[in-house]
Length: 111
Image 1 (cartoon, rainbow, N blue to C red):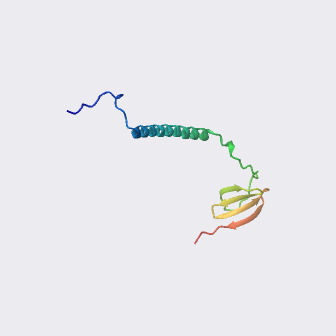
Image 2: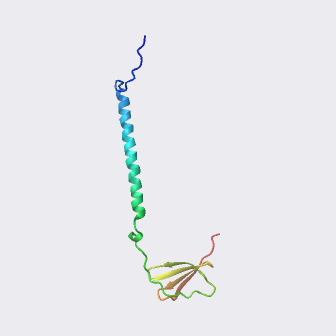
């Protein structure tokens, strides 16, 4: 008659290939846990970092720019020695630092 399976886990020996596979799975699990913790910590510390690390544009803007009659500014872009204003009518106005109009660009829609 065949022997009954042994109930004691200590007496059952795994083949060497299964022991190696078990060790690989454990190492993979530990490295994945460490990776998730590392990524989480990096995200938390980088997202909490103040925005002062990025250089700020500190172009001096004149107190008031004289836009042509009927124009409304949609966007203002400071340049090194100029200020660009995009209007709602599809024009780009380039001003000097003193507020005088330097150039006017008409933007036409693409065909």
